Length: 391
Image 1 (cartoon, rainbow, N blue to C red):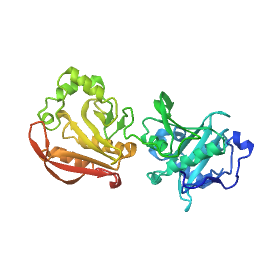
Image 2: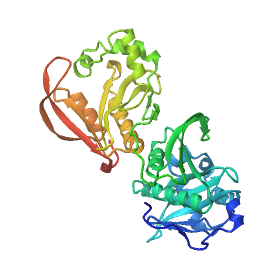
Image 3: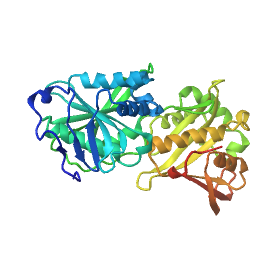
Image 4: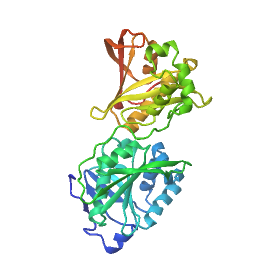
């Protein structure tokens, strides 16, 4: 149930003109600890809010319109464009008690009788507080009860896992994937998740999977974490005979057919995510990093990684783990990340420490490695609340 009844402070019921056009309005929505108030034309404070949102790299990545907002004048034009647009409503999201600005949200109507689609952004300082979920629920109620729409939609690129969690928490069911359907101004046609809720749907949150359905590329420091491809097979067959890898991270792939299946398995993210680590200068495969044992109930995951012999000693393992850690916290939304390595493997200890994983203790004779022996292990972990990783 929504915790507070939604209400408009100016209009109990929308006049007919506002039912068909989202022109400049004075509708305020209050509920769930939030106050949604309209943008104000020519207001310097609202211009500053849009500048703050557009300065956020994630907003810039997932909202093509914000890529053009690089000045106060551009921010004001962005606001005016939304106030002037037909069939669109926009609000600033504030805390109901303090009026602290938390983000923005809007909805637009595809036609007089079609879907209302919700779009939003939360300021980085307000994330992790349920703001986007609560604001989305308020706007969904507005669409159902005051615009009279039976269906409210929310669409996001598959790579934006945070938006997927917001949609499901706001009771927007995942209906499917539209392939190569969203252009965010970066020249890439992204696959998109389509969520929707109907008027009679329950308001109970829907369970969210930790891993997206499709592999996602993640940039790093001089490296990129990319999906595995079948052309990686020769490199994998070559590296699997390295003595260190055979001892600490033995690969089960022993022949070309094994490798083909090994790569294929890593193309469908379900209970684990895995990347090939590629050097951005040479284009060569230099390692692997993954999250396994994904646990939505415990909000945790466990790391695995290795670096090819020719690339060791260059900090690649730490850089790859830092990039994967950012993805795990921001996209998977986990609270705790951990990793184990043999005490006799000091190089792995250095990788863990360089990525901000604190040593929590030693487990005795806890894992049988590729040499057939049970080894004592170090347990390292990092929490979402620990702050920025690495030096």
